[in-house]
Length: 52
Image (cartoon, rainbow, N blue to C red; front, side, top):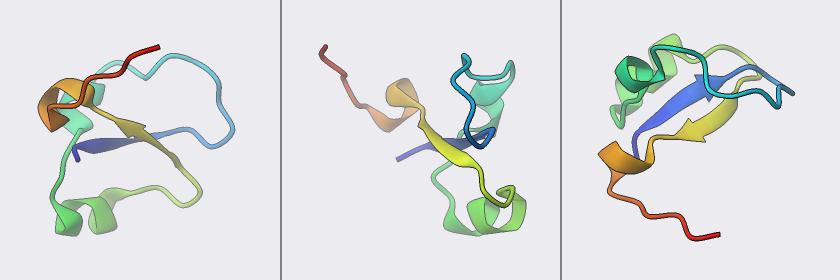
């Protein structure tokens, strides 16, 4: 899945630029992921559909 970091404990919309930050590359995730960050999933790039 293409994921991007979200601020820890935040309940705000994803920050601008999240589309460029979303990646499924494990090396890039390990190298750039902030400590304690929450996980956002880029549904479109991950080909995931969410039903509520």
